[in-house]
Amino acid sequence: MSVTMAQALNTALHDAMTADDRVICYGEDVGMLGGVFRITDRLQERFGPQRCFDSPLAESGIVGTAIGMAMYGFRPVVEMQFDGFTYPAFDQIVSHLAKMRNRSRGTVTLPVVVRIPYGGGIGAVEHHSESPESYFAHTAGLHVVTPATPGDAYGMLRRALTGADPVIFFEPKRRYWASEELDLPHESAPFGQAEVRRQGSLATLISYGPTVATCLDAAHAAAEDGWDLEVVDLRSLVPLDTERVVESVRRTGRAIVVHEAQVFSGFGAELAAQITEEAFYHLEAPVLRVGGFDIPYPPAQLEHYHLPGTDRILDAVERSLAY
Image (cartoon, rainbow, N blue to C red):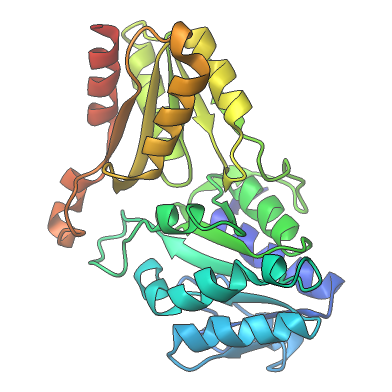
């Protein structure tokens, strides 16, 4: 059947809460309304207000209480209503959620999942269209993952809700309504395992979350000109599947990293460094990066120019081939 990413996430939460009564779900407008994007739709009706409920408008409190609940044996999955609303909870995430296992020498685990709708493409403004993944990827002690397909959305969220460590679960909001033919429940690969979404031989496009589909569109357009591009979906930023990325780049000799976040100090910089360290003698050109401009997120009327699209990706491929 045809399943959207939003439906896959909703089903994953439903199935996890059915399988384990320690799983609880809360956040701003998560309960009765079912969330701004309806990811938690009807969960309160099914499981009651003790397990799916609305929180005050206080992100620090949302994550702080989740830490306390996890210490007492629960498995909280909390929603940051929008990506830019996560910043008030930043201290709780990086100072406590990420560090408690190390601080307690492994005796205290915090199986908390922080769901963050992120990225642009929905005609919103700043604080509603951010790409803050590098902040959390830089923080030791967190898993940082982001699905690009409905199948991965289901499988990765179920996996996140059964692990022992905290997971920052980035959901590409402009892909919520993208669908694929899928039977649920659906198994997905473990965290730390990238997926080759399209095989090719000329250059490797490396992406994650919302820009995987953009890279696939670029690869299909490039094929009309005889350019055979490979597309790698990272799926997981931490842990990172460096082995599969490097294997692809060694075959193609060229790498272009694509993400919505600003290029400067974005996650693409880490990828470029690791590829250069591991595949230097196989490279036919420098690793290139395509991303958002180094500006605060623009007004909705201008986001089309800010976000990387097919033309900018293909321009980077052309520049790579020119070396």
